[in-house]
Image 1 (cartoon, rainbow over the protein chains, first blue to last red):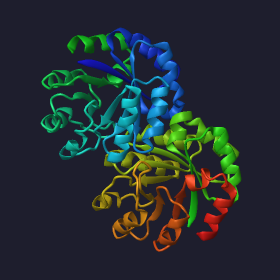
Image 2 (image 1 turned 60 degrees about the vertical axis):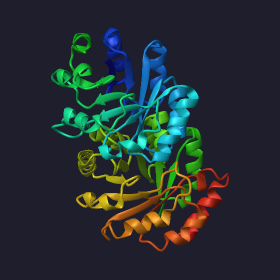
Image 3 (image 1 turned 135 degrees about the vertical axis):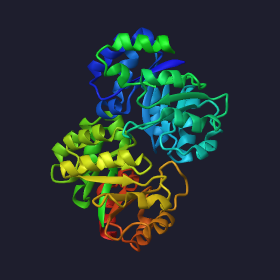
Length: 204
Length: 204
């Protein structure tokens, strides 16, 4: 399993410090939605320039205007950009087409998508599917979400999981066929960034 | 009906020019999602500082992390901020609570919300409900959307409508009890900004 480090609710300076500390233990750097909305798309370019060898994900959470947003993200150095599964299928199609033309990747964020609706996305063969428990909901249950989704997603697709993941969740996550584990505050808010990132890497 | 001018896919400099030209004919300035994602939250402050007497809407399209995003928008001078109706109900509750504490407004963007689900939002008494046809979908039919929603929304709520609205749509829109008409490229992309904004104002 790869580790995607989600950077949110910090300054760009602090983001860079966090990435430097966690660098050896992570695979993907996520420029969080809050960072993009606070500092704009230049946050992606700045971080890509500093860490050109890491995969950069722009958590755009696109709901509409997919072509403009996805072109902007890829042109700024993002390797992966996110669209909401809750967006219209036309929006997701537009994003996918931009992703394919840039030879980059699209992640579909399944936040608030009902598992019965997953079949709609089967045409997006190269998409990454992100099973996502919302930050704003208390008592999230990631493994329940995973159980709901596992039969709906074709075995060959790439699956990511996100939503308040901490050390306790890892044994349960390892029972599923997950490619990317997205970790945020359990690393970034810990005060022991390198130590915790290293511990996650070891566990995974 | 009020006119909300949606500014998207332009530079901040161009945004300011557009607002200056349209200024006498519009009621609400919308800092579009693309502007926020491209230039960051400072785009809101910059425009509020220049046009302090107009109502400013930050089209955050929040899907998660509601508290941080809404506080950021209101602190930067936004009078209204948007959350997606497709977000989790917990996210919308958090946004509403921030809006109430700032004594500002929350708009719920009903993009891709099924009209059967509208009842979920009845607790948000002071929210503005935005009936929204996606930019990425061809052959949008605003009046069909409005017909679907009109019985579901309590008469006392404030209703906005968005999605590729042009002059042709106005006679139809006037049949509904709409408070805010959101207009974007029919004004901003026209090359005749003042003229078209004035024409919309007259028609409404």
